Length: 292
Image (tube, rainbow, N blue to C red; front, side):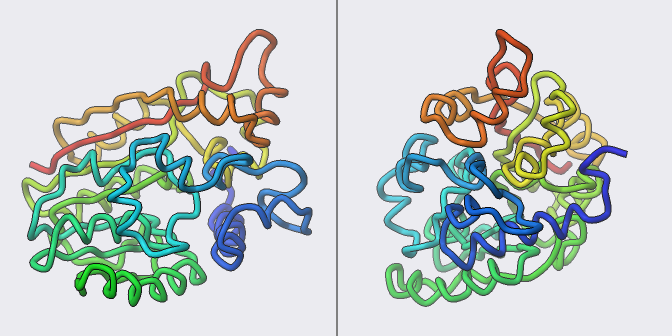
């Protein structure tokens, strides 16, 4: 049984992200806490950069100033590893579902893109994140004049969304956290309308990680230890019934966190074989697919 097969994975991840939601950033997880998820000196990765602000990270991975301005203050907690709203090429009037919505960052950006005739549903399994996202709705409505975003509590393996009811599924650095990725992909296929599409940004592996990293709880919540090989991502999406599956590695994210001396990535580096670096094992991955 691997670390991500353990029955307590959801609870471990939920606990770490609850603390992020309460404090507004990953930094609280740098302090040791019994049972904490990014304790000690480690943190970073999807828990946020150690030395750069969430806005700087978002800019580095492709969010525009206009997109950042559309999101309420506090919605961006530095939990992104790509820009799925741009990858999805969203259109006015579409219904969008965001898996692992967090504080609503991508939902609010998507809402501005689909407009008054569109709809965005954010799902997150952490109660504190859902509460934070719902509090952000009022500011979003004030800034945009739109009332098209809602948030639901639920797990991505069991989505609280009707069959064939959404046009686009997006997700940002969340699929790697699932202990049952095949089921999560099946749920994506279930909720998509025929012809609907997927735009996922995630972390994936170019080669297997050393066991010391895979067993590290901080690396799990930091979106590294639960990642699977790029080919496994493609296979899971195809097995769920999706077509035109494309998986494009984006090495810049991992290279940036390593260059910025993110604490988690420095810790991971110390556990890797001599002469290798995190970018040799981990990559940001853009995944697109379509439901027939």
